[in-house]
Length: 169
Image (cartoon, rainbow, N blue to C red):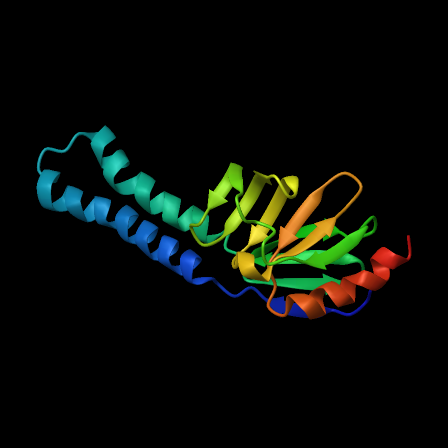
């Protein structure tokens, strides 16, 4: 598994819409504050109306999923300026499943501001961790102690690259 293969992380229409609406709403809060409350504004209100909404957008943008790279038995989830590493040593299976995230409930994480990432739960997979941008491109990675969902462009090719490692077990 020394491929060094990189897969894009395309955004679904719903992710684009949720991100657009969320960023629009969050950045309209400071504008609303400037128009209506600027004169004599309390410091706590300044933080609430200006710092928090902008910080939410900026911090969330750093968690955006840009691509996935498979290299030397590790899956790297590329983010702006950093990456999350997932060791593939104990990978049992890698299967494409466009319905894998259907009916999921987010238990901890981000539900659509630049990505769908964190801990989720549904009937099909139970508890799982997602690093997703388009649920219809889901690849379910099963390990002895966890399930991870990623959404690379070309999910069939992605899962085929991982299958030789999972068959070695």
